[in-house]
Image (tube, rainbow, N blue to C red; front, side):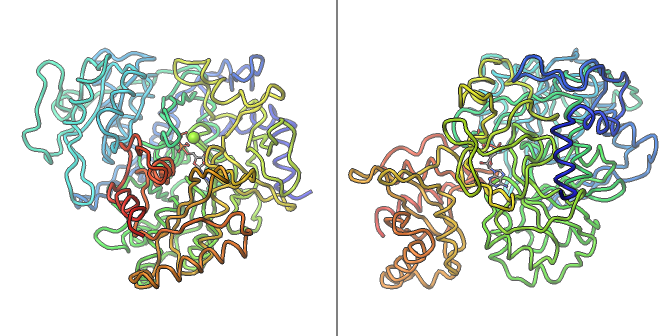
Length: 631
Ligand code: ATP
Ligand code: MG
């Protein structure tokens, strides 16, 4: 048995002994009495009886040991600012924010809704909440007022923290204005709204008696000393809504102790990050990657973390690589979409930076196609680790754990089940798939530490959304298709609701997309199933080409369409051949980089594209509508 296999097996077969050891990575005010209480599955209580605090472990502990080490590096290419905070400074700012919360009557268990751009105060706001046992709910700043209002009504926050505005691509986004609209729409608006005034939206409206200025309040608490509130391990640390790609977002509820232990272990075993090093996760605090690997993970590990306000392309496509060089980034975490965007740029940007500090690049959030995986691996000359997980799990379910064993990477595969996850591929009757047989990715409970403990305020929905796939056995359903090859490498084939059913054959959109992308001129593609009278559904592809001159003429377009179909025939067979291949210059995605297949499919079937509040670029959808009409 290999080193990793043995390690993994122990995490499942000697679960409590395994996690009892991992629990030593964090400080416990009171030691746990029971490592895993699984008497009420699927509900689990990790480290029951233990008392700890997430902020204490992320900040105070390091502030005491290494006060002058950098904890937070804020870089904005939108406002051209850079600020650094040591662990000692970070603790001071967090205590000021915590004092201000307490002064407003925020108590243990109260919700604090954070709707903020990527500025240091957003990190203070999160850490201050967990410091006093309040529960934060960060809502991604790209959500419009209606989406924000539904989250306000679900979380029912006592207070909200926001900013006058954010900046994106050089344009001002009026956060405070959106908050006002959302509060007007919400049934249970917060009592108070704290505003970090960046001076970006001069003269934003203020609501008398409700709105409070952060700088003024902070000045009143400069010397505040707020001791941490020790909470039970199972006490909720935060609520985070899923991205909503497949429908109504669910309020993922996370515990405290299990999450801290899981993240601390993952920093070592998966991300190979060490105290004193720098981590750069390019996500946003509004997403789970932001929670786990911009804020809590790196800080728990005593690393410096970069909070970046900006895009990968401004002021030029070399910005991220220059940041790696300048801050000596050791661990970088991004998403396949961003890499596909960078792949289209002049290679000189990547080549001219000194990337010697970088150990690994981690990518997650959507399928990483083989072509992109190979490209970035070769361009960087560093291992690129695809890792698969969900808002629900909080940390990777599939990955190559290089901190345990340096297993070879297979392009297109996020690797093996991560220790703690009893992950299997299931047939639809609840039995386990054999090698190379496609099925649903599921986890046999208990879910390991760090995963969701319930759906906020709705235990019944926790069971109905995640544990009702089969009568027997009880399994957490990821709602993603997967496959495991003979060597144990897993592949994710797309979401279970993204399946195309062609004359009784079930095809994953991902498989067809991989085949289309195997044509060298295709940069990116989305495949959706479109209703068909005869076959039930047929695949239709929307592709972005690397060399647009190839599709400038009708003749060129037709020739390329034929070549792409030919490629799919070769790789998957004629059954998977897209009925049409449309060429566009951009694909509609959410702000977190996920393809809006639902909306593309609706347009292709002549229906309304549905809720588009999280769309990155509306013109991409218009292009699709246009292509459907004219090509
Ligand atoms: P919702 O659940 O509200 O529809 P969402 O599923 O898009 O939203 P997230 O939790 O952010 O919200 O995304 C998790 C999903 O992203 C996974 O279930 C999977 O479909 C996809 N995903 C994440 N990482 C990978 C990866 N490495 N490879 C393939 N797919 C991935
Ligand atoms: Mg999901």
